[in-house]
Amino acid sequence: MKLRYSPLSPYARKVRIVAAELGLADRIELVDLDASRPEAGLAPENPLGKIPALTIESGDVLVDSPAICDYLEDLAGKRVTAPTGAARWRALRLQAIADGICDAALLRRAESLRPEAQRSAEFDSRQKHAMEASLDWLEENAVELDGDLDLGQISVVSALGYIAIRFAHEPWAKGRPKLAAWFERIMARPSVRDTAPA
Image 1 (cartoon, rainbow, N blue to C red):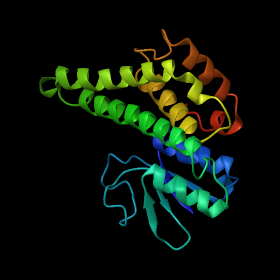
Image 2 (tube, rainbow, N blue to C red):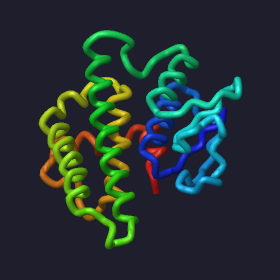
Image 3 (cartoon, one colour):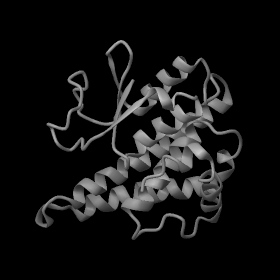
Image 4 (cartoon, rainbow, N blue to C red):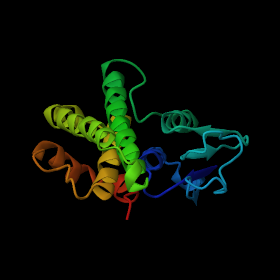
């Protein structure tokens, strides 16, 4: 299998953590590329031109981290997230919130790269509010991050790691002691530590 990714991508990091937790990391070749360049080498079966993209044994290409993680779970014959019930819905809710943080952060990052005269302070403010409100929700509901590692927690740690780098000037841990303590604990886990962006 071949995973096209960027070391900074929180979505790709999610996939890499899941692969490590399932014992599949050594079966995946990592191909580091810049998805912002059309000629970067993304497979033609990936019309979105986004990462991560996983080329599987059949030659088919899977895109979008939730789909890739689901495939890896099927391949491993085990899951990092409960297949049914309340634990599954909790994990999927955490994943959606974490991915929403990443979506807003990436939109803010893209906006910051536009020529200054074309940037929208209102747009940036809306995305920043979405990030801040979601981080506050995670702080208030930090108990949901307890328990065995699952896709929700993996998504959250990937999001926090990304914004810690891209938005270092807006430290997410400030005023969120429960979330910060959880992050420090989970960073000690080998799959999380080994995939941390440099």
